[in-house]
Image 1 (cartoon, chains in turn cyan, red):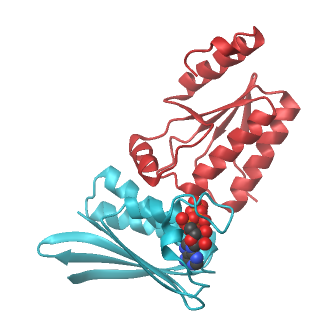
Image 2 (cartoon, rainbow over the protein chains, first blue to last red):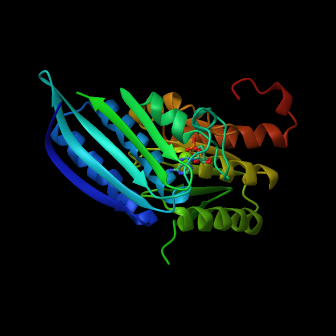
Length: 134
Length: 131
Ligand SMILES: Nc1ncnc2c1ncn2[C@@H]1O[C@H](COP(=O)(O)OP(=O)(O)OP(=O)(O)O)[C@@H](O)[C@H]1O
Ligand SMILES: [Mg+2]
């Protein structure tokens, strides 16, 4: 897998979440994703950016243009140094929330992308990586 | 602080969401809508989201909250103008927008609300077929 381009967006405030969405929009337009694919990826990014901010006490998003065997895609990595997720399987279930949300962000964003992975350690932080292929 | 304008149109309220929502705006809007409904005795609320390029769980929750609060105060909510790509994504996200009715355009939404209000006024509520 090759990384052709990379950029980073801090996630420290709710206006950073807006900026992250705009960045994903711009890159997915450049890669000529269909409108539906763009909308899915931006929505997933919005969920994960908000999670990093609300549950992870802020973090950053890395956006990468990647290619693999002639396929191209966008990889988004959301990282925070927050409290971490004690039970990832539970957190992924629709409807599970420790806040005031609907508990749809994690499970929902997983459905909106082609590849999804979470690493999390209690007390250290959380890293969610998603890929949407062209 | 900037806010989302809530316009009065006869017995209805019209809210056009054009900016990227964030927490404070959403809370302010919920507050404004409930105040306007009681102030004007509005029977319906139209929320135009045609310029929103995504609806995530945060905005979805805001729409559901506005609908729930309005209902308590006797006003129905219709969300209008959702883009097809947004609708497809919402379904996959798993958000069904409970208690929120939708219509394709502001005109269609108005008709829905005015018909519903007329039926309620004449006591035909239970026979309503296209709810
Ligand atoms: N970055 C994170 N750091 C710590 N905990 C997290 C993180 N992301 C998610 N979680 C935990 O997983 C739960 C589920 O997350 P999810 O995004 O599905 O729902 P939510 O954020 O609570 O609500 P919604 O996204 O529907 O508004 C959260 O309530 C939180 O406990
Ligand atoms: Mg969330």
